Image 1 (cartoon, helix red, strand yellow):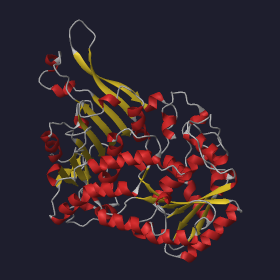
Image 2 (cartoon, one colour):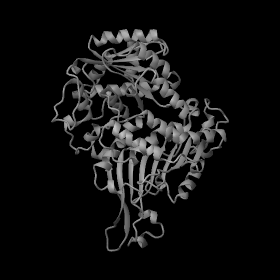
Image 3 (cartoon, one colour):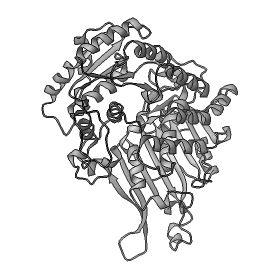
Length: 536
């Protein structure tokens, strides 16, 4: 399991890496000594073939993320010996044209450049293209025929990645299931967000998918769960004695989950306007991270045990109230002689759009561990910086002997744990210490684990980890249907109220720190946003 690999020391042991483990798991039967848990494999697994079909291969996501991630896995020798990658889309294209398109986005690891062009050539020879309609069983049957030719009579395992708009998910799944499923191996489908717009549409999507697939065939992907620092959350907490006893209302004053982008919708306005920042970021990425952060210790690192605990957290949350939410939308702003456009300046966005590009919310978990602790969540576009981080602010030291050294601002003396997910990944703990010298002057310093300085190895992209897990059948980082139901149950009443009452968002300048209302929301719970402090 990847968690086990991440808990190793700085000198990695080759056969403990997730890449090596998956490769060995697919190509051979590992010994029980090498791993802590048994891996059930068919003795003929090495004679199987894996066919990966990217449905919507001509789209941006496929070109920028999926094909590069598959190449990175191939470069690391993580894919099985017999694998084929097929692109499927409506565009007319030859195999050579697909390879030319894909080759423009492939890169090798910074720390591994040997034989790069040779590896690219080998990978591209495994890439093929089939043109067809997303709702045509006949076209998928033609794809099936081509896949069988490449599988050469081996056990056929098939992975379909739906890199397409949600309105054609069901048609594609129906056709793939009925016409291109594996006859003697597994068939799995990766589904990209959005998983509906609210509880009703999400439930309808799940019901439709389950007409053709079992729950364990559906891999709902949230790429934030594949990010290194998010994966490290459970390792940090459950394998370090100093943190677990502090992980509760007794010592933690508030938790902040912050996501910001320094650019606007930039041509994606038509898509974004139909969803908004709450559906696009908060209801999935940030809520999933929050559930991982706040969950109780799972029985094991098994996927179902972890997802069971996440569901308990989601079901313990209070439904969001409008009074605990601030929404905003960026407006035009001129800085340094450059004019940055407003959200509604995007030609694909209606001029009278009230869709939020910023949202902040105070979330509460009504259980014994977190009762009364505010979880402040905010996400926004066109802000002053790009970041995604978790900030844990601890309580003030009772009867602190050194209060006078901090003056009236006790927040300056508060310990804070910061997990920076992106960019420039890091984990640091803010502590108070004495400045060297004859006087008694205190300073706030960071105990800093900066990933780029500590580890020479390039951090894999989230899509690499998630594709690797989907091929291995590891569901820990994918979203189960009851998780999805619980997440939508929290946000659907709020979203309906915002839309029915036509709540006007607070406007904030492009490139600013967001609406002033977000600071008033934090102040209501005696909290100061951690990303606006002097250390930033």
